[in-house]
Image (cartoon, rainbow, N blue to C red; front, side, top):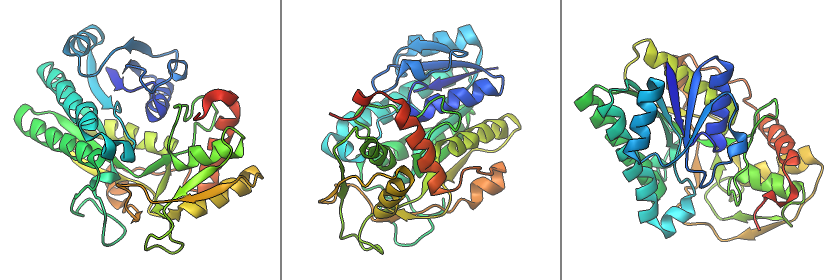
Length: 330
């Protein structure tokens, strides 16, 4: 059984490709390289340059390689950008997912694992957030992913597709063996940005919003190591292959850290006291969101290995130090 990984040259996708290849799976990657890095794709995988919404490409890959499962990462993910240009996000994340699903269901591919997000929940009134928490996104990014979840639900009912949608919390870190990591130019992930500041690729960094109703006034998030996230995808594929029911599951640790917690951890681990300036809050950012991860643990038997902020930062820093000096934002 070959597995199609869309967005497999991206940050999370390249880690997924590594894990699948390490597990002996036949892997096909489809990526348009708009943000992905070709060099980060494991050479054991087959690579196709193209758009996930192109039915001719998708149908050809399914037919040629006997694709029996799709892991769909390809998307745009920057919350403030989605607020500024919502139609771009509804195209990239919703319309293109619809086109991909049309090809996948027409070809009778049985299994689909979807990269969703905790942004579907919006501003939550209580924590931790469970899958039963109402999904009321406050950004077009979150809405675009929620609509894709609805399409999966309806496709499962109409066409018999079996799926798992994983709602990620804040993904960070890098492959512990140093084979891939966050390489996207102009990345906005907090730990990535802080590591760029610690390695001198940025003159410093900004903290957006200091008057949130949190313990130190900055946003609180649940940070998950990218390798643990990928192991959840492997567990999801095995779950579907073994006849598991369609499911939506949170993917986080259940522990929250503030922006200032993360900045101080990066400074301590790197030994660099880089400059930090305060800036206004960004549109679409909830004050705090922390996962309830009991469902994914109970349903998939998922057991994270890197559930520690300092470990996440150490791996992210190690990868950042491998990247060339011109790889950060201008």
